[in-house]
Amino acid sequence: MGTSGAVTAALVPTPTGPLVIPAAAPEGGPTVRLSLIIPSYNESNNIPVLVAQLEGLLTPVLGESYELIVVDDDSPDRTWAVAQELAQSHPRLRVMRRQGERGLSTAVIRGWQAARGEYLAVMDADLQHPAEVNLKLLEEMERGASLATASRHVEGGGVSDWSMARRILSRGAQLLGLLILPEVLGRLSDPMSGYFMVRRAALAGKALDPLGYKILIEVVARGDIRWIGEAGYVFRERVTGESKVTWRLYVQYFKHLLKLRMSINSRFLRFCVVGGSGVFVDMGLLYLLSDPSMLGLGLTRSKAIAAETAIITNFIFNDLWTFGDAARAQPGVRARLRRFLGFNAICLIGLGLNLILLNLMFNLAHINRYVANLIAIGIVTGWNYWLNKKLNWTPLRVDTDAQKVSARA
Ligand code: GDD
Ligand code: MN
Image 1 (cartoon, helix red, strand yellow):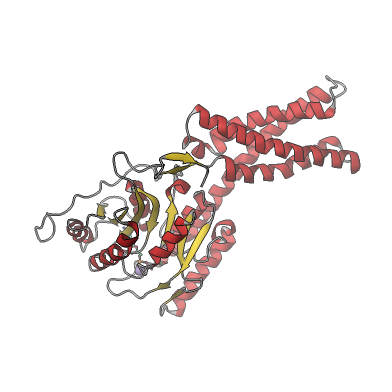
Image 2: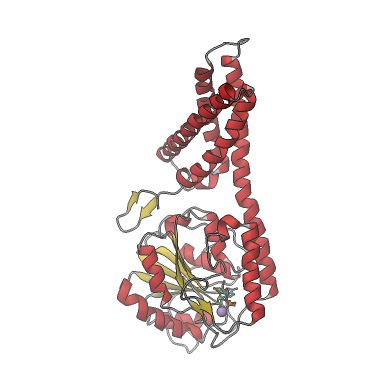
């Protein structure tokens, strides 16, 4: 029963376990176009206003194909109970009350785990995010964006009367992020935003591991984000309640950046370790096959056999270790064969590049064949990593409408 004894809607069970987004909506539930998560802590006055605004904006565009999920961390002001009562008369609204795990980022992810939508979205509950910007984000998603984010730092964006200290802190945090994670924060004009939509397929199977408030950088760093759409918005002043941002969240943000830095590097480091083992296979076979004191076969033929053998051993280790998380999200022999053929094609192109570089350095620059081979392998390793990460170990896009697996997102 709700706060006034009125009948209230059932709560959404809180998912537990790893923070992994499923490739499709949970069993049995209808699928919808958009699932908008609204994380809340002491927002009981704001939720009714926001739900009415969102319904007025989204129903004309999406009909019934959307859901709003309030994820409340057992607020002292009983926001969850207010939302439950509201859900009784607003069928698009669902409510999750978390009583153990806490924190903004995990609240969003738990909401996405329970979501049924093809697009997974988040916005603040406190009316500081203009609700109408959702329509602009939807337009970007319909145009094919992997991610559409509301930004205060593009045309039409801004902050209301933030103190100079708050502006400096926000911009300072962004600058720090650009130094530590340029390949992530460099893709966003407002990496601090907590107002965005992401395609489920871009996150399917990814193990997320956020810290603190900034869920957007986690999504861009770990998701398969091809292209990003942005829409300007003015961050408003709060009407009721207060911000939960403390200095502790800035410390958590810094730790989050470092953790992502290590995690991204570690994947590339693992790829290089596997590549290193392939160098031994390649060099060892090149020696056994082509060295005059061994079989003495021709250089190119020996190199081709040595390289293909190294490609096979590298694929096995990369599929099990370097990209193991992505491989586990696409189980099955057919999927593994597809990955192997993709890996082989990328590496064979790399081998062609390797042969050209080897012959140029050996025959034209007269560099020792083994030194030339090592330099060529180094250059080709960067090529192979980037292409394999982008094209090969990427979950296929499941088009929820046509229930078919189509080309990658
Ligand atoms: N479930 C849950 N648990 N919700 C939380 C928690 C939590 O621990 N902490 C905050 N929230 C909710 C608030 O209720 C609000 O809806 C939203 O998250 C943002 O919290 P604020 O405390 O209002 O943050 P802000 O006003 O400083 O906004 C900054 O952070 C937001 C979140 O990243 C800005 O950077 C915004 O752009 C950003 O969206
Ligand atoms: Mn706020």
